[in-house]
Image 1 (cartoon, rainbow, N blue to C red):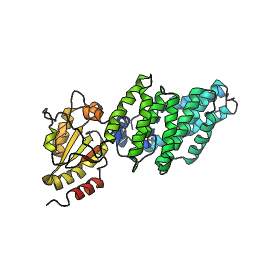
Image 2 (cartoon, helix red, strand yellow):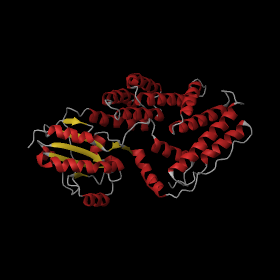
Image 3 (cartoon, rainbow, N blue to C red):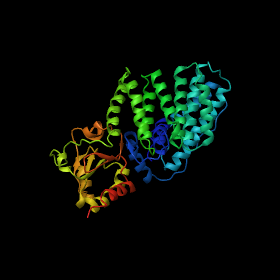
Image 4 (cartoon, one colour):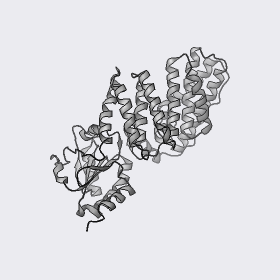
Length: 397
């Protein structure tokens, strides 16, 4: 990965997304932020192995000197190399910064302004180690965050509250789904306390979105969006208000099962798409893009089902979130994709009218529509697509 121009903090944000995101859930959907890391992942495959870079030992010194040392580690440029080398380096930096901060904290009182800086650095380091699978770091982080929630520094205390909520969310999303209603209530309470805080708002949106990728989590996701949306809409922060607007589209998409889905737009050849041509057909609506790895990986499966059932009334409508028409046309020609593609050059990418209308924030997103025009499921990928179509067309000739 070519990241020699990135600081440790920038690389940490990218790496955390690549490794596991905020909630460590199994999902092949590609979010907008993950899209930004794709190029880096591609470069990583071509990067030479240079060996993990060395990290200096923690020096002796005053609290000020120790914190300056920890900050310098996090501000240094990350050496180029493979993901494994980057992982090793970032683990060393995170662990070393925590050790340095702990030495500083030994001589600081919780009311000391330096304690605030030290606590923030320590939580960041432990969060990184936790995301990379260190169970001891996760335990230490939770214990320390509980202490920090009582800090007189309000911004720091709020950050600790978010850390604890993320920990709770991981627990719920990794199997304790029965605790989800309480988690949603906790998140709602945190939002109500400060609806102008963008970090809390973003965390709420990530949590609601994460439920979509949990088996049987669509109802929980709808409940979360419905609980969070009104609070965000009341915010005086414009960034938060923008998030609340997307909730309307997301709820519209989550309400699709059992209802009719409106599909409009321009085809790749510039002519308007007529949804009436789909009357009486079983339709897969696929939000995708040529830069989306999981989308491309799913294409052979969709092609197989298309060839198997197209003559019996199965159609696919691709809604491309690409911005480069030439690249899209080249890809379609090379892969010999036979189904219609909707594309909006003037409002490409994530701003495609259909993407905003249905609150699409991760791709591939697929919707299976029955012959009656009503949505059957929002989960028609992989083996599930074939199983659904086998049942639908079992009585067809």
